[in-house]
Length: 191
Image (cartoon, rainbow, N blue to C red; front, side, top):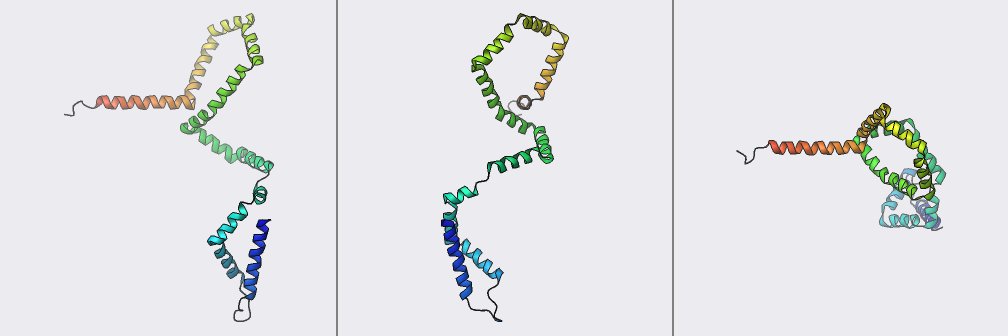
């Protein structure tokens, strides 16, 4: 309501001002561009800025400016699933620093999920039931000793080495080792 009153008052002022202004030569009124410039100049004044701030702080105006949840969700979904977005994410995840930061950001959520599952008595009971099964224990023993298990262990180790977190740690270790080697190469006493 305050916004409408402020805008109506402002509009009335503009119409009165332009309607009562002296006519230019040839009987023409102040042209659109001149009126626009005048309005912009008024809005740039401290009083104009304060009027805009008052209007924007009105709760009713704020509620009208809030976007519809469906529109926001739809926009995010479209921007995340577009071909450009896929290309962006593929490129971003090739950067070890970005991938590492992303993995660290989600790591806590994954840990929390697993911890919550382990606190769930029903989940724990199911897990224990599966682990106590003699048939499963026998299969696990055979599996651990098999060539397939060795190959799988090797594959897991290689995948771990491809992990952004592992790469970052390895990179840090290599940098520290290089720095230590450099400091050992420098002659002691500086001859």
